[in-house]
Amino acid sequence: MSKKEIIMQKAIELFSTYGFDNTPIRELCQRAGVNIAMINYYFGSKEGLFEAIIEYKSHYMKELLQGLQADTSMTEMEKVNLLIDQYVNRIWSHPLFHKILHQEMMLKSRPEVNRIIEKMFSRNMQFIKSILEDGMKKGIFRKIDPEFTIASMLGTINHFMNTPAIYLLLSGEEQHTDPYQNDAIKKRLITHLKQLMEAHLLKK
Image (tube, rainbow, N blue to C red; front, side, top):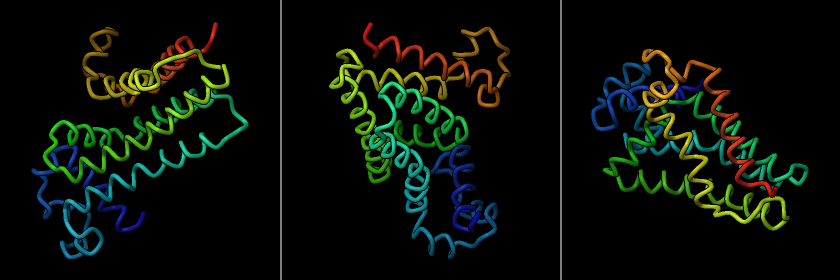
């Protein structure tokens, strides 16, 4: 891992714990083993660091969605199922980054950062929407509302990730259980989403 990547990783850990505003840049330097000059060299500022984290972390999903859109060997339902697999696994592997994104979207205290987050989500949603629309054009999917379908799919994931206590209450599991460390729960979520989307999208 490069020094630049180490700085971003330590920043994610601190931002998710203390919030962006309450994270001292000196503590970040100490955790990453760098000085302030190096952070300024790589990112220009604390805000620039945050923006770089978003761009770096969103690159994987951007490449995945572009590849799915261009892939002619898969059906649209296969693409949706693969997207569910990848999206859940990606968030499950990076829960702190996911937490930071939603903190920023709720606070809306940094307009420039929010514009970057919104641009990232908008780009991803357009790729998913195109897959759904292609499925409708080919007659594989019934006529659905693409925007609300995306909201139903991603909203379920986001609700689960942001409010694990509600899932634990519904499931009857111990309240000290960490859903993000439980592969059985992850598999259950993926299976549910695939069943939900297949029932919603496919023509009977």
